[in-house]
Length: 237
Image: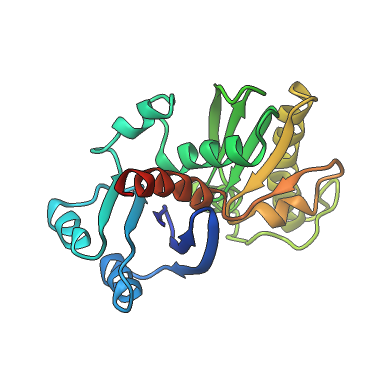
């Protein structure tokens, strides 16, 4: 399973639904990195989800690295219909939904993917997709404050915040983190019977601010891609 996101590539081997070794790559040559992973052992099925379109040349190259290649990008969207999902969803969001259906079967869920963007998706207890929203992620908000206001510095996620800022820096830190927390808590309050599930690069960071019970599944996308791979593996068998 390979996920090419906005800022990094994540990959994992899996046997069935059991994830094995995982990888993370933030360089400029993702195809070379993928072929390094598969150099010693070629997978029977490779599922690659990408925010960017895979070129025909790269697709052909990847086909030689596995038994069956499944590409999920804006040029390959038919698989969403197979799982009853709308075509506007990015494949990382779709994979999150598939994984939540599998892990939390019979439970309504609110899925928060906390990364470059913050996506919020809603699942009914029966597994139906009920819609979702997209907002800016934490670091993206800090970058936006710095970029669009000359008076504000560029800062990173703080280790702690105060309820109300008493300096320029603490005002920014509290404003961004508290703002996201208010969003999360507001969504959770709108569906009190639903499970709250965090994933993405900032999942653990925001989990520590939560007062109510939540589930953190850092590899939710890869689990969803493993489900897709398992389906293709069954077809091959």
